[in-house]
Structure formats: structure tokens, C-alpha cells
Length: 444
Image (cartoon, rainbow, N blue to C red):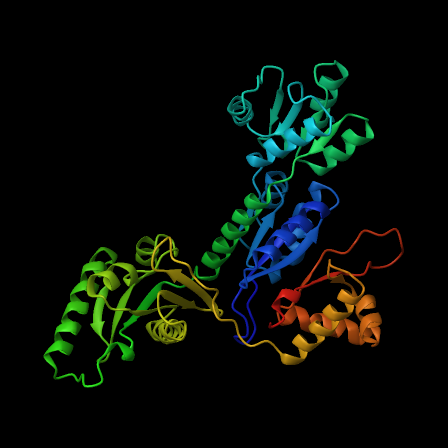
């Protein structure tokens, strides 16, 4: 499993495995999302049967694997030796509507007489009825397991040859290529950007859970910011004592359902000790912060909450201290969670809270400078794609190829570039690896 080095990075590494086109789309959506905690490593296959091999190549460097669809996911996970958790981009949904509309507008096929694979039959029928179309002449071949995909091509071809359809919709790249070669009008259905974004978020949560899997002891520090007290407040003040009693009472109220212990830590804070299972319930699977919303509203007092996970009470408390310091630096309103392996998560007070990204560690100024120089030169050439390889970097910066490779590795280590899958080439030797420059991370 990927482990960030020396505490320099707070991120989840997602391995993206699929055909070249969909992998590039997933990387593009991830980049547009601008989530600073995501790091992507791409691995491309030529045919779906290579999914397991490609996933294993990157497994040691990732926290979770995201496959381009259910077919490569099933192929890759069947052997049972994938060492990281995995998920996949679902098929159907809004992508089906978009594909059918494109087929009609571009006059590729008649949507009322078409064959569709991978999507459940009931989903297709429902989609047609929702837009007021008759699905009675639409033929569907659902995906059930890898063997069922072997029949997709013959399913589409036989219907088309018999004149029962005017074209086909498939989700499998190799089937799409075979249909095109056979001269059958067809479109490849690709997941919509919203679906990909939601799946990336799901993958990140799965990866976070996997990194925290061994952590069983949970310690929380609930602290009243020093600025919340009047200048003349002291432990002997009645107001001060009343505030502490009220806070303790409210903490106990929330702690009981968690089977948690509440202990006074110092004059301004309390320790809450519980287990990972109880924390998952209290935070709705690490999506909302305990205590923050209700107690803030009840007492009219902004709290700082830090959650620490560890294999021992000592480790959990040290991580809780680090987490509550992060909450203080962020100005309150959100809880921080710190676990082993430099794992850092933010939990909003409620589902509607607007959480700012976790403060990232300072980037190497030299790496930022190099990225800025590359961005300027690419802008001068009106290259908006910002994808380069070592040879291109050497040309732009006027350095040797060896220095260019080292420069790209530094940019990746600093989170300023993502390695992309190598382009397929008929030339002898290893094809050059392209890198996506993340120029949006250059300070404004």
C-alpha cells in the first residue's frame, strides 16, 4: 500500500485502470475537480483481459484502485490477490441518455431500433419511458459476469444482420472497435463527468478507510479556543466553571451513544476515548464531525475538535493533538482527523457545511519555479493541454534528457504533476511517459 513519505503529503493515491480514452477522461475530471488530496496513477490496457496485470503493476504505489467499468473490475479482482481495495465507474445512468441523443442528432442510428449492452434491461426500459419513447424494439444484453461480455459482439452483429436494429451502443472498447471494423453503426457509451467525479470521491473514501483499517483506538480532543474567554476569566470564576460543566454535560450526552469515555484534559479541553466502530457510527462513516454542530448551537460556543487514530492510546492522543491544532489553524467550524501514515481528513459540522481543503504542506519553491517556467513556455506556444514528456521538458528548459527526467520525478513527488499512461507506439523500445502538469497549483 502506498505510504506518503516523511509526512510531506496528505493525500489518497488512486490507481486508474482502463482503456486509454476513458483513463484520460477520468484523469481530466479529477484534475478539474481540483481536490488537493487526490493523487492519480494511471495504468492502461489494450484489452480488458489485461486489467489484472495492469492493476498489479501499480498496486504497491496506490491506496485504492478505480477501474473503468464492471468488466475490468471483475477480471482484475477474480484472482483474489489484489492487495488494495477497488471500485469501478458504473455504466448507464445519464450516460445512456447522452449516447442515445448523440446517436439521433448525428444520425448514426435510430434510438427506437437499437441494441444496448452492459446496462440492466429494466434501466433501459425505464429510461425510454421517462422520455416518452417506446422501448419495445430496443434489444438489451445486460452484463452479469466477464463471460457474458464475450457474447456482446455476436449479440449486436446478429440483430443488425437480421435488420432488427439500426446500430449498437456498447460500453466495452474492444467491442466498439470490432463493431466499427464490421461496419455496424455504433457508439461507445462513456460515463458522464458527474458520475466519474462521484466515483472518484467514493474511491477516495474507500482508500481512506483502508489506510485507517488497522487503527482501532480513537482519541478526540474537544477544546474551547482561548479567544472565546473574556480577558479576566480564570478557573475560579463562576461563569468559567458553569461553562465547563455545561460543556462536559453536552459531551456526555453525545458520547453515551458512542460508548465513549469523557475525561477532563486541562482547563480548556476534554478527552473523548472510543473505538473506530463507534466513531464510524457517530460520524456517519467519517462524513460529519461529532459534537461540532449541536454543541455549538446549544452553547453558542465555537469548538475545536481533533480526532486521533492509532494502534495505541499514546499514538491516538498524539494524533489527536496534531488534529486539534489543525482545527485551530483552520479557524474552527470543521473537525480534523489524523491517523497513521500521514492520513488527514476534514469532517464538516453537518452535511451542508462548506469545508475548505486541508492545508497542504509547503511545496518546494524550486519545483514551483520550474513548473512556472514550463507553464510560461507552453503558454507562449498556445499549448493548453499541458502534457509533456522528458524530451519535451529538456527542449523547453534547455537541459539534458537525464535532468529533464529528474525534474519530472521531482514535480510528481511534490504533487505538481501526474504521470500519464505511455502512448502506444510501433517503435522499438519503451515509449516515452507523458506527464500532466498541474499548473493550477502555481501560487497566484
